[in-house]
Image (cartoon, rainbow, N blue to C red):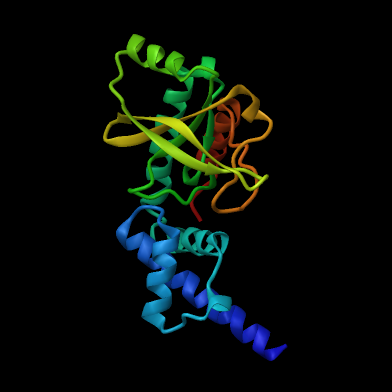
Amino acid sequence: MGQHRNNNALRMQIAYEAARILADQGGQDYHGARTKAANRLGLNSANLLPSNAEIQQALTENQRLFQRDTHPEFLHILRNHAKEAMQALAEFKPRLIGSVVDGSADSGSGIQLYLFADAPESVLFKLRDLDIPWHEEESTLRYSNHQQKNHPTFLIHADRVEIRLIILPLGAERQPPISAITQCPDLGITLPMLNQLIDQAISQPVA
């Protein structure tokens, strides 16, 4: 029992060090931050390495404690950029996923949206109609059946914030990819749910 408690304490020590690394460097490279934190602390045993969810929890606590004056406003800006993109692309039933939803986003996070379309070209035609420049790449995502699939992804920008549009087939609305943080299917949130999240954040005073 005592060894178990000690291991949990060491895991959280690595998680908080990884969170500090992410806060200092920006971005969402949990694996890189975990490895760097374990090396820095000399704690490289596999059973001591924290999960992505534990690192995310530590990161959220770090932001609440040390970025309480700046982080809520920054998150509000990102969520409003996401809202505008979802409104413009409403015909593709957009779902917002990732750190902008859970609140752990930082300056290197960007915005991630699932768009649902059987023909990725239809999204391109829409971007052209909106006169929005894009850059194309692929995203490799995992599913609950242990499969990995590549999906067309279009990168656009709003006020220097990167927005990743990940194109999924229509059937993926019911069976979405797995979140790298929770290891569960990532349903994301719809535009009405995002509006509710924004309204809740505005109504809650900063602690």
